[in-house]
Length: 226
Image 1 (cartoon, rainbow, N blue to C red):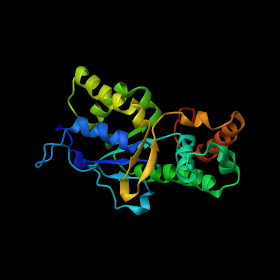
Image 2: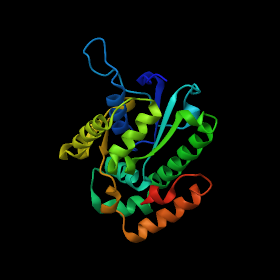
Image 3: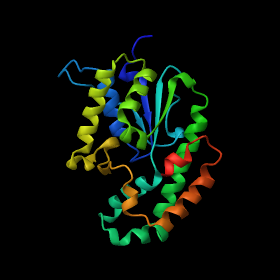
């Protein structure tokens, strides 16, 4: 089978889930040049909303669904709305409907896409966890190559994954701006950043709540909440 073009690929992921990192990796693997400047073409389609917001996905399209720990996402959202002031984080968790709304929307996003994608050919559907992408980029890159039918030897896979991770590990990349959907937002890529904000008690309460909400899915809840 021929290698897939970037135009045959869609990324699905809730906001702050690492779709930008994943997109860069895929573009490196697919190596789609622009006829104007010999660089990769425009951004890959990234679906951050729920399925009802988008047209039906052709069965031939390769769909990559990335999921990130909601606690990391919550910290990103908190930093966006509270200007990074750590003194009000508990208020954000307890008193603000913004947090509970985010949790429910995140769960709805996962469950609704899981239902929608159950009709998509499994051979064209790939699930990836953000924590795996960051901690085991070379392994996940190899899986992506197999999924996308991209022919790369182990040396090239190592080169690409190392390139992506070196960029992500730069201090200035831990916090950066992005303009997906014309909305400029701060992205904090550090996996497990929630550990700097959540107390043990807060973590346990959130994890218990999420486990109940997602227990009917086949999501790896332990991996997702660690």
